[in-house]
Image (cartoon, rainbow, N blue to C red):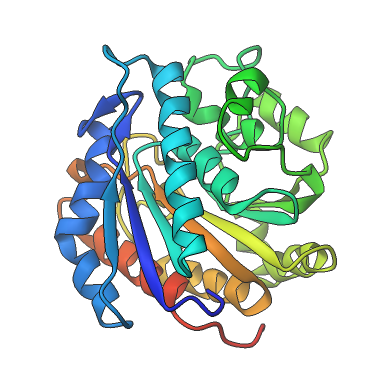
Length: 292
């Protein structure tokens, strides 16, 4: 978390352009479920801001990028005030606004997700733009729309670590294999433990110090922890494993911003995902410890 004295929570309660439904209900549930109280124990009172698009009716692509522009401004203001930006969003593509506000020139990305989010409009079979977030971040698609987000420029593929993925479409696998993205999938973590992630992070460390951490909560094991959303596949990381992984990131880098996405509380009846998410917030907003 670096030397930030306080946290700015930026709430983006939208899923596919619609407010408060499905994963769009997740940000509010996180706030109401104890986020504010957890953050207040870390230091000064956090600030909260909720972004809303002006476009009506909502349109998945247009609304997503309009929200990105609003998030970019909020993140930029938070950093200018010496505050740590924590973005809670329904969809992963809100990350475009976060990295734009943080400044992409010397920024790395550590992306925790069950899915690769590396589709493009030409490869997707669902048409779901949420499955394109990382591809947009590295400049592979929606270039004109992303270019309209203040501060956006593509992050170099070599500056990205994708961790915990276990459900990638064949086209995504091909594109990832041809890219410079460092992929540490869930199967590899299962075989080698977190030392596999440590190696990828050490490789990233040779090129930069600043990173954005993206946490899609379906990276969690639905059986061990709980289902974060309807798209969560089998397998994944346990709570302690994910917390240890986040500690490895913060111990190596200056985490300048973080995003938590894709939480649908209707799939978390016993609150285990909520509890884990709050523990992850604490890990992301606590003072860094030495790398392991």
